[in-house]
Length: 567
Image 1 (spheres, rainbow, N blue to C red):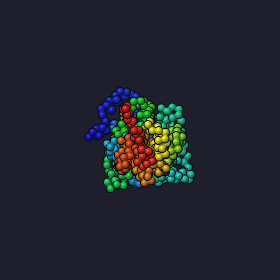
Image 2: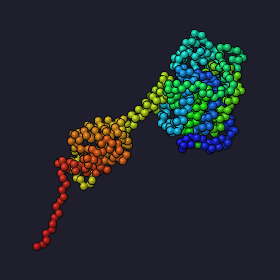
Image 3: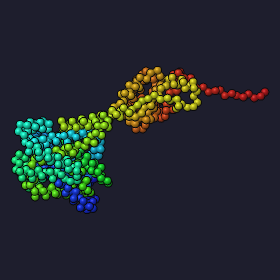
Image 4: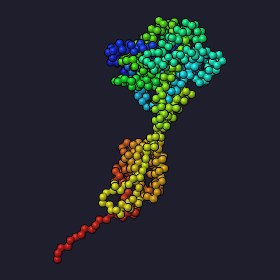
């Protein structure tokens, strides 16, 4: 119950909505104007139609604002989610998409209760940038059929669908659709450079719609019938027999919703001062939103980075802005559905083409590519996997490769170097004794992590030791020691012992003893009494060992002279 209460909204979350309502209402109105063509476009691209996009923006947008963990987040249908939904629609139909949305909502709530939101911080920046670049490419390719004014060809692979659409266009060109899509995209891109605060997307869409109506451009196909209002909530689409086969798509949708929502919330925090989101509450809010949206015919939703950025830039300070955005879209759904239904599909394709282009941050990509070769490789690989495979697989591949390269970099920091142990000798040794000890003892200092990624290199170096009788391992600077490192150490000690070389250690930390003890390495050292707290003690033990072997003279005490009494 404590965990449930931790993800539920508190009174303080809504108290801030009364502080500056005018700014929030204006910001919400602006975001709604920006979100309208995006919601329509993503609904059409998903395969469920414009009404599904609007229903998602209204229902999911309102619930995610109420229950989410960010005061500034704006949720609804997004391009990344559309990329995942297209193959689900092709394989399972609209009912499958709605079922997947419900299942993803349950999974997101479970992630919130398990406090999984904190792990978002471990996603490397090159994975995020590559993921975003890949999504932008997929969104752009998805718009090719509508931008060219041809029927969307069958298929799940976006590259293949775009190619087939291009072939159909070359057979029967539709320059009206091309002109509308290119014109809308150009207006949006130029307007964003001129006045970023003005929602040029809605201006361009209204202009394109007016042109098609005035000049009766039949070649520009409209959205089509858009019934006013939202459909009554229903569970008629559920098919219990398909739940097993839909589990994998639901996991993919939930993973994407979690990833994109937490990324968006992080971006919002970075654009403001004093705003910090709660990642677990954000997952909970997205879970509630995805539970409800399918009941009204909506597609799975997630937070939208572009709309959230507009919300912040226009002065939003609380959840009231996102709620206003949902309310304005609801009014449009109920009052202006006939007008919205006349918007050309080519115009919406232009909106999404411009959106895809603006998603690509050239400066960030250039910085990642110049940082290190590993970062560049992870970015390119993640982007390519996003375009060619699957979004969730792309993130997994990016994380695995980034993790492997990071382990390699960390393992390369581990060093074992021979050190001069003579400064640690007590002062009573003579120069002759120093020379004798140096002939028979070698000391190594191990720096950095000793774990599975680099431990075997350490064993190879240590096994090459020759022509000595004692090896002292100074381990005070070992930062990490796992089971593999402990096993390698034990193996090295046993190999040296078989060659007649005694191994002594100094400075083993308390945190390393558990791994050494578990594999029997600590017991091996203790049997011979060769584990010491400090290096001088280890040197004294080595000297004693050499004395017992007859390689060093035993210390002798000068006899006390007895003064004779005078006769």
